[in-house]
Amino acid sequence: MIIEKYHIFNVMEEIVEQITNEMFNMPNIEICICDRCKADVIALALNHLHPKYVVSEKGRIFSELETYTFQLRAEVLAEVLKAMEKIKENPSHPKEESIYKEVKISVDELEKHFDDINNK
Image (tube, rainbow, N blue to C red; front, side):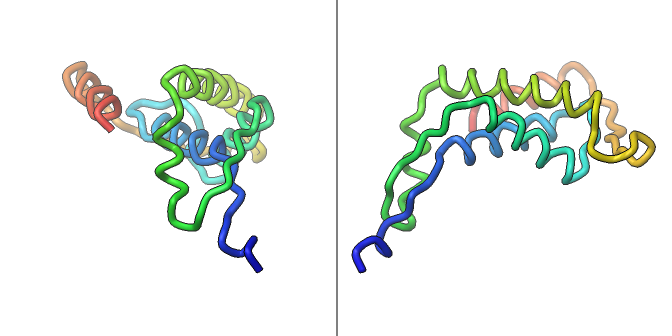
């Protein structure tokens, strides 16, 4: 069957997950970093974004990601930030079960962190 050769893929899922992971890896983030909260952020952000489906041969999906613009990434980042605020205020678990990072970082280290993200 010819369809088996192709994969239908929502590029937004990968972009939202990538940006969410970047945000959750930031130093001094003030949101629960458990897997459930991260998944809730991804799901909530995706619910507010239009899907971007592509048809790709298996193994060629990631080359499709490179074609999306800075503007699209900015829109995704805005939705991820909104989702993070909502999940921070209303996690799916009791707030007492929240997991937070305890990282102290200097301004120089923070600038380096942003430079590293921008260079990816």
